[in-house]
Image (cartoon, rainbow, N blue to C red; front, side, top):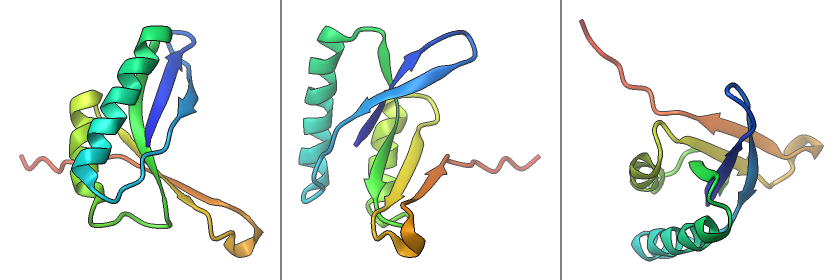
Length: 104
């Protein structure tokens, strides 16, 4: 689920890898994601988590819990959804950021 980012310059970066966690039990899978990223950090110390991904065409009820976890891993994480149903002969991809409305 994590999206792993490598900084290329002051203004650019690249998603260089991601890995899957199966969400049968969210808490256990988040522990797995932490362990996997810790292993990745030992080899690629310049890479950072910038968000997470999930298959599907919309945000689900589990998304809030998972997104809260990733807000502890990085500032304003990206949630990427990948619709693998191939409707219209393409894979739908959407990116979401948390929006906080501040009332003045």
